[in-house]
Length: 443
Image: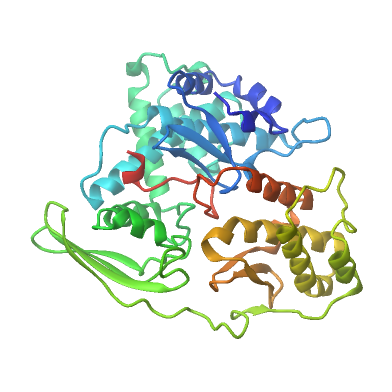
């Protein structure tokens, strides 16, 4: 039920041991295995976890695995239990969610998508309860579901619940919990579209997918950058509606790095009747200067010069240096040289600067196929954010704190692993807990 790559993770023995504490999770994984499916590691979307409809498999981002010590034991029990609850959530999508129905309108897509989140969240709660841990999705929803279970007098029974239990014993609780979960997720943001809500994303993604070249358009849109006003569904009195896209950011295809306007008309039966595509708008920032809010440092310190000659010179961690390509070694040098002066000004030593450079290398390598090689590595003027600007002028940013919490070897090994794995999955950076495709892709 676990792929070879999953079983090679240092924390796998501890994960397996903890998973066996939840009979409900064991049942879900057993059913997944009986269908011929597995749980995989995704080295590309490192901070995502999702169910892939096309194959029926589960994917867990490599950065989500619990940290372990030299003996392979988890450093934090809380993180291990939360990780197991995440397996329960994605297992709920794979095994418990109804994938036989297909949405026929934006409203259907929204309702079915949120219903699926509610089902998965209920499974996550059951697993978290059985391992006496915290839910991946957060304390507030866990407290709400605890209250629901207590009010129905079944809190103690959850500890031994199996998937084979008679449905009538749990029907009322499952229905109420799923409703609570759907309402909870409606106002959250999906990891693929962190600036809009699930409520918006499910409907808008369905409409985009159902235009005449919808699958291509959906793939080219940079959902990471889409804001609420960018894509709108405008209803008409006769039941028809219009899909309007205004300055929608694109991260691949012929208009990568630009913003595109488009419209599509749908009749009352949600069938597309016509669409237009306008001339792409120009790029959002100049090619001659750093993006607003970022500074490029072009002087070299003694420490950065040393790294330029020998990237292994500043290596605080034990273990062999990963086998990076010459191109990636050059990018690592570039990131260190360009960032070290600004980081030193904040009091960071060369080892910590290398951590940041390694995180930048991984980000640059992950997006190279879509956005081109890194053009420059940047530090925000307030020192809180690191940026990688690619050849197509796309600026990918992440918090400096995130880089400092990731060991350099971890980033370098992830880059090495990415080089060795087939490019089967979209390289999407995520900002929340788990990743789900639009309903039409999952049903």
